[in-house]
Amino acid sequence: MPMLAHQRDAVAFLLKHLLCGTIGGVVFTGLLLWFDIAGLATMIFASPDKVLFLIMLFFGMFVTFGSIAMAVGVMQLGEERD
Image (cartoon, rainbow, N blue to C red):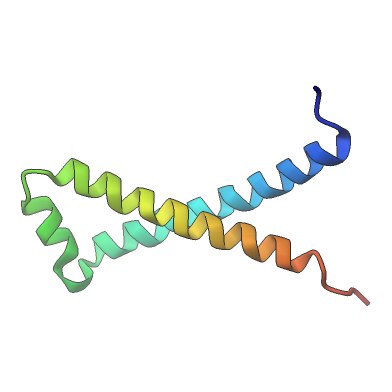
């Protein structure tokens, strides 16, 4: 069954917000590692499993920031505009 026009618009709307959130997550995680907040980067890069830890950290941030961005986008749909 093909998607209707309003369904495509809704999916595009959510994907746009998801993309913005994941970009925010990448930037935040990069800054977290760059400034070595709480010695996080030092611990990760000293570990033999650094790739696994980096994947887990970035994936967690993707999910968190992407979900928040989509939720904010949906909540803004109900705002009244002047």
